Length: 580
Image: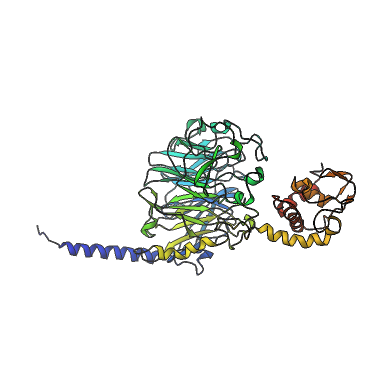
């Protein structure tokens, strides 16, 4: 037998050469990114290629070990709510598309989650969780559909997101039935129910046997409670624990205008990022996290209620800005990206819808670096540009809204969006060594953009500009009767200043513009009896502007009127509704 002695320095050089050749091979096999990165802004040396576009309103997805992509849709195509995608070439673009799904797929029943686990593709709908056994080398599974779990149908927070641990368990999010467990849901100043009756079946996470079929919710165990809607959920295999980013409650100003300003309504409460251990209590609905004060506070519905018997709520590991709508969470386990991304958390923020009169915010993929199982730095912007514009007045103005995250077998990160059904594949082409602060600097600067930054209370209040435009309309149609100062003439025409007709129910105020008003009314204790002509010839936008001007210029603490509020009531009146 011939024994060769190899010097340790030689072994070191051999190892370096192997790593170098492997790295070069990986980079050369990656497709080229699109010239404009598909409209995305990314850290230095990252690229993006649009894999497919307009497949239908996409939600979450899963990527198989051979690179096939499976996406759940909220709108069914070809009597199916799942689309399977395959790239047959090397350009990163999808060449083969197939829709499938032998389950109830009409509107409202489309999948709300998708995961690949133990050779099966699992997906949830409004009323059940199903799975298919994946068929080797086949794009569409040839197996029969199996029912894993069934549960009741309800309309609020229906998304049943899934996660799987390493011991055969499946975790399912059951969102709350209400905004904040009020006696009258989403009703101004309605107190909260105590104790909240939803915890029996909702507002928490349940653990099930991932391999058992035909289960009901009673077959599972409640794993965590006090979570309003833990849509963004993933199992962290490095820490062997579950993590969730939940959606915080809405409408603090609309329901409690004496306690919260419109600015506070835009900012609060935080979207909370938890490590979820068994038995955890997130605090909903009794508490929420105020990221401005860095502490849990009692919800307005429960001020004055003795909460001494409520478990102490868990503090989040990070409190993100309010209403950003975290819709997916993924812990990166690949090797393509620089080492700082290893075991870190990517979060898809779908974007807000409850920040008016301030700009809507979010619409990004964020990243939280982890070290030794805990965040090792502040949250970062990993991918931006989805919305296509900076100042977003309404969430419907966004061209794309990030939704789902998944990793390919080569470590690429895939991102879906829910408006048209576009999917991006994000790649890294640079050197992994030395990647750090300098490469992230331009992304850090993006935190100052309007759709991401903390809004200025005055400068970023879109209603102020709206009110300025409304003054022109007021001077054209209203000033002759109600006068420039809004005090009326003291005889025939009532004042707009401190009038509950102006500061009260917005629907009643809008109806006055659309239908006019005739007959005796009382304003500030004085009777008026003249005719207010209808002005339904004004557009929805112009009515919103003039009423915003009247409410904000002549009265304190009266918020803006939104164009969609006018449009909604106009449609109802035309349909013969809201006639009272």
